[in-house]
Image (cartoon, rainbow, N blue to C red; front, side, top):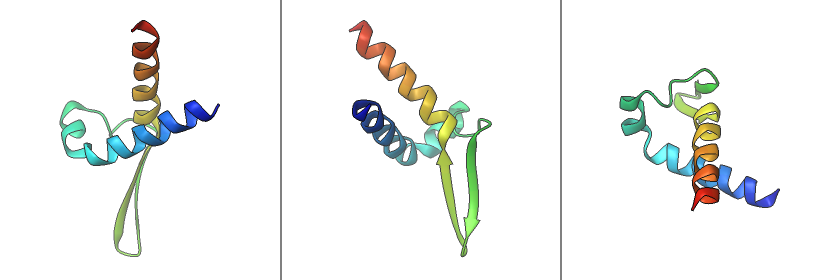
Length: 64
């Protein structure tokens, strides 16, 4: 359980840093990726993209 949480948090950090590049590929604009403005600042929660990347990382880890 804790390993899944760590992978999810690391994926969120990675996605936030690579957001401009991922949006060009179509990721980050999926249903379930929330973008909202609060106090004049834009926040981005890529929940669906995080799940997809986490599942791919999990499959890749099991495969290797």
